[in-house]
Structure formats: structure tokens, C-alpha cells
Amino acid sequence: MAVFFTAALLAMTCPLMAFDLGQSTRCVPIPNQMKVCQDVGYSEMRLPNFLGHSSLESEVVPRSEDWRPLLQTGCHPQAQAFLYFAFFLVFFLFPLHTFLKHLRDSCAPVLACQGHAWPEALDCDRFPAQEDMCLSPQPKFNHFVKDLPKPACQNCPSVEDSPAMKTVLDALCQHDFAVIAKLSRRRLPMGEPEFEIEGRVEFIRQGPLLPYDTQHLLQQWLLINVRCAHALVRPGRAQLYLLTGAVQHDGSLALTRLFPRHKKDVNIAVATRKWKHHRC
Image 1 (cartoon, rainbow, N blue to C red):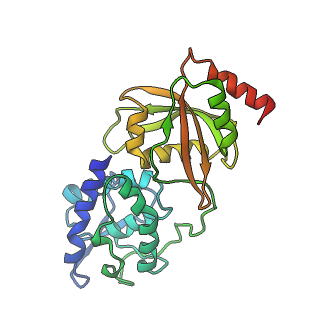
Image 2 (cartoon, one colour):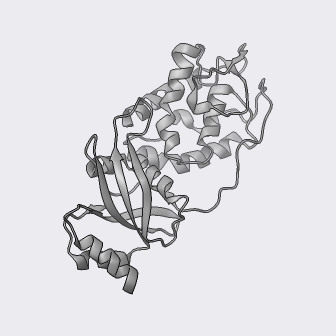
């Protein structure tokens, strides 16, 4: 996934500086193969676009796919809105410099997790506050996001094989939540996430997690902390884990202790049953 981030950042570096807001542009249909920009609410875009792309086939479509891994991490609820602006030249319903600052604050740590700095090309002063667009603004993006636990870049959690029953029980007592989930590492088509949470998530200790959101939350954690994910699951395999962790004061989720669950390892099963019946 880091390769995709590198390509995306390189693609952003120069065109922003070269784009002339006074140059002649034309409206063209948005191609159906731009999967990251489906359901945008518009049928046309402008070329050249804000990134300096002038060709749909050789620039716009392949470059839009470079941003898919970052969008999949969910680092900012309106990251896709920025993508629409950059590729389509649509209006924002808020000042660009303010939006870009929030985007940087949310997504720069994700890029740092991949070993990349926030690119200078995305400095808010390089974006116009207002410009004549051929597309009308539409309220497609929600500015108010419910305060839910969110994944964040972190040091890789400890992984403990064949733990003692007391070790597992202590982890269940000391952390905000504990779930059993199967982490899978697949060989998928380009642009699709390599890691995923397979099947349903079993709650041992629910804590602040929400049943409808937890699988997606853990999926985003894997995509953000991809270096940790590589150490947790071998290619083409899936591994069942007992995951324990906490939700920090800023709302970010941190996994702290992970226990691989093997069929012959009875201590995890005994500890979880004991905790469910007797708690701490």
C-alpha cells in the first residue's frame, strides 16, 4: 500500500504549482471507470483539472486510483470531497484553506505511518478560496461526524503466543475492550485492501465499541497500521486473534495486547469464559 501512497504524492507535487486558474478548460463526462468517485452527484468534470491532468485515459483515471488506499483508511470523513475538488473542480461549501488544514491534521499521521511526510504541494495557500466552476455545489458531505472511536497510527501492539490463563484474564480486566476477530491477508486486485477482518467480530468485553462499527473500525486500523498488519498475518493466510485495547482521551483506538488463538490453546477459551461469568 505504501507504493500507492508514493505514487499519489508524486503525482501531487508539481501540477498544483503549474495550474493556471485563467487557462481555458472544457467540461467532459466523468468516466464510469473512476471507481473512487462514484456517487459524486455530478456527471461532468473539467479538463485540465486542478492537478494539471488533461487526459482522461492516461492521467485522470489511473491517478484517481492512486488515492484509493488513503481513502479506505477513513483518515478524514471529507477526504473524498478533496479528491472530487482536485479531479473535478467542483465547489466546496467551506473555505479550502480551512478544510485542507483539517485534512492535513487527520491524514498526515496516516501518511507518517507509511513513512511519508505531508507534501508541500498540499499547502492551503496554493489553493484558491473561490473559483468559477462549471458545476453547481451540492450538499453531498456531512460536516458533523458522530463522535465515535477512530483508528490511529500507533506503535505495534505486543503479540503473545500461548499465554497463561492469568495473563489473558489480566488483559481482559485491564483494558477497555476485548474482541475476537479473524485477520486475513489476501491477494486482491490492484487498489483493493490487502488486509481485512474476515467474518463477524465476537465481543468478549464491548466497552466503548459499537457492534455495527467495530468490524469497519478494525479494518481501518489494519490499513493505517499496515506495517503492524504485515507482522500479524502471513500472505494468503488468516489468523484468529483475541484483541485487547483502549480508547484514548482523544477518541483514538489503540490495540495493546494481541493473543493468537489456536485450536490447541485452551487458556484463552478458559480465560474468556471465566471473565464472562465472574468479571474482574
